[in-house]
Length: 200
Image 1 (tube, one colour):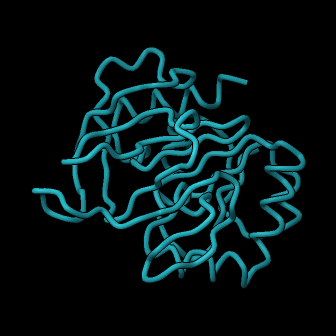
Image 2 (image 1 turned 60 degrees about the horizontal axis):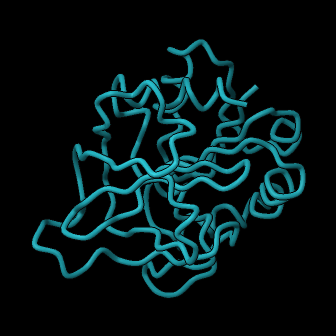
């Protein structure tokens, strides 16, 4: 069973809809017992880094998820804000600590000739192809104003170009996360999700 973490930052229903389409059993939950019983954890989310961390901490989910993912090595997928919160710190609206699972910092997208937020379809450049096999058209749907800058480039699974190179996804051990929204990325996104669940 897949636990889709509900911490008041939206996007949970569309993620579950995509999993329903793939016939993958899931529950939208913040219940510790259900999360502990799950096989896979998904942390979606849209909005600010600061509010996301506040919401996780208010429910005790920061400690619980860290135990489940880092200590118990449960398979994990972060989406959009759910990827950014894995960083050591974020700068939205000012410096705030994150979950600290992946070394690096979330920074505002700046000094580019394009409109912010980065919103819409963009092609990605795959660097770690563990979950990207059988995806021919690698266009995915983005909407974000901040981007994750990892300390170690070896965790970068894919990038996209929006005036600057932006990390589109990361991969480290049992942790996989995307800045884009696979659940809103049509066939490419569904294939990515299918690959994630089929690849142990």
